[in-house]
Length: 214
Image (cartoon, rainbow, N blue to C red; front, side):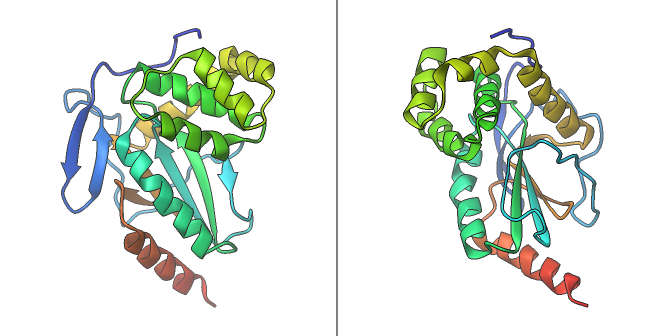
């Protein structure tokens, strides 16, 4: 891998009071903008990002995540439950925000390579299953092959400059939005930080659906 991904040197694991828990960037390295406010809506570029759920769903949940963040791993089954509960009403879009370690960048590249073969969500689960184990290309390739991907194409995409460019675009967008940690969610453009429980997502979804009624 080319190793040009933007990487902070360390990460603090903080409990965010009233906001859930998240992996955060160092406080000595502030984001480019203030953190997004929950009472405002922001526009996020979604073209080309991994997504599941109907394109015309009334609610879009955008997740900025890091596959090496334990709180992102904790949030994954919550999002799965949300999609199962609202199969026609919610669309889930993933954006890369690799901030925890150098392996965060490797994981993001691998997930993006899987996306190019239409297997992002399957490979997301593989990456979370690896937890804190070191990531090596050989094991990533074996896991890609095990879930039905072309391993040679996977390796080529893993090393492709365009894959790296895509991850860095997401990272730059996250910083421009003022994000400081993962996971970070936007529910129809409204910010929601940290690994929130299912009930918090349900409350926001109900509110958004009520607002959508004529």
